[in-house]
Length: 170
Image (cartoon, rainbow, N blue to C red):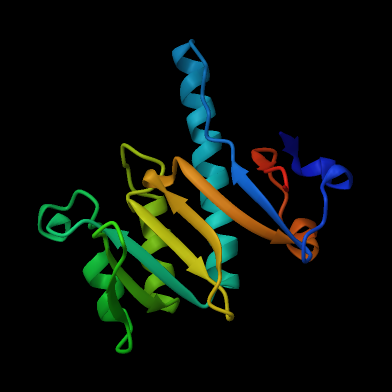
């Protein structure tokens, strides 16, 4: 596992590098645990905001029925309604997907959620930010506990966070 600052040791593949957000928290002391969680949440917020500006579309996955009970359906209707050309899809695991343009409404909804009190890092169960080529460049899964990001050399120069950890290239 390499930290972002160890870029010189990472093998280049198409100028894109795979990273994740280190959301581990093994602190036993309550105060240290809370401090670590705040650091993780702050990092997630900063990285998500960066990719909201960089991405073109958002794909939010949720379980059927969760929009009505609110469990993993946070913001689904608002995001779907924010883009008149939004699509609804279904993946191979029977998860529903809202595929919408990242517009002002989407950004504001996600940024608003960052300041709300949630049990998890993110109230969104699973979403991907898609680039202009239709490729996922950011994936926040399991309410933010598993965050995967794909950074170019330019991104690495623009975004630094001590919790970003590289994934080994195979």
